[in-house]
Image (cartoon, rainbow, N blue to C red):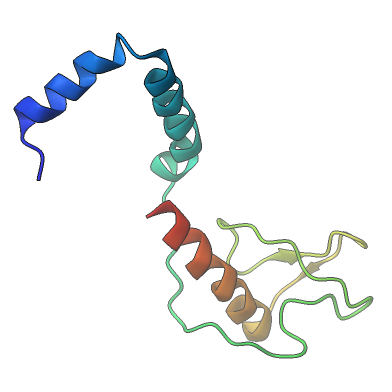
Length: 102
């Protein structure tokens, strides 16, 4: 585990390493939306089904939005869909999305 002194020493190294500073800036940019508004953690386990997560009109996979657990939009027809099976399909992607950010 890093001590406060270790962290301060690493911060000082950033001044002499532009590549590390660039990496820090990219990571901070990617983390900003999550820090500004915490995404919902799914209350239910994901459900893999033949109809959840797909547009009932044309079969297109619905867009994934980590901040929209109950409103799911079709990228083709632009209609919004709701319902437990779509919510639980969303949970599958949300679990993966959250794990990547952890």
